[in-house]
Length: 114
Image 1 (cartoon, rainbow, N blue to C red):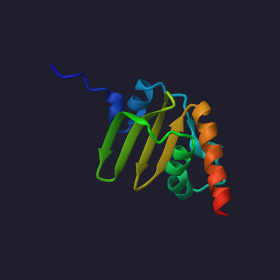
Image 2: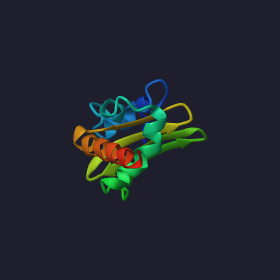
Image 3: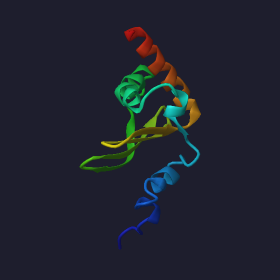
């Protein structure tokens, strides 16, 4: 017998099912912590920021990838983080206690490059 299909895993609700399963329905958006950054800048600096806070050894909890990109839920410092990255958009959702240090690290990295 197969697992029941979660209707929130399908368009137009997707990825709500992933958010619910990992306690991220009330998560914050990284873009709100860096409002003057473009989506391209967020995409370019996210991994470096994650490395800077020691989150590069993240553990993948759930992933749904397609040809154009997809969604991945990571565990970083014990907290869930949803990374939605495809050819149309880039979004990072996580609890504020993870996004605050991530945004600070990303700002510091950008300042050093300037």
